Image (tube, rainbow, N blue to C red):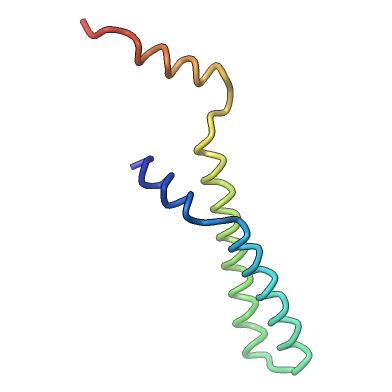
Length: 84
């Protein structure tokens, strides 16, 4: 399961979410200047979805990295032990 998540995570880029946030922010401002509250609200929701996506990307990419060298060493040592 972790291998599938890692390959799926590798196919995304943080720039994808940054671009979505920039575009959504521009559409919110444009919709506000037009006074179209339907589009303002829908674009704010899209901006919120982009923020959630960026946060999930950041969280998942951080979970894939070992937190310390002690964690890496503990995992490697247990793999070298011979079964009884």
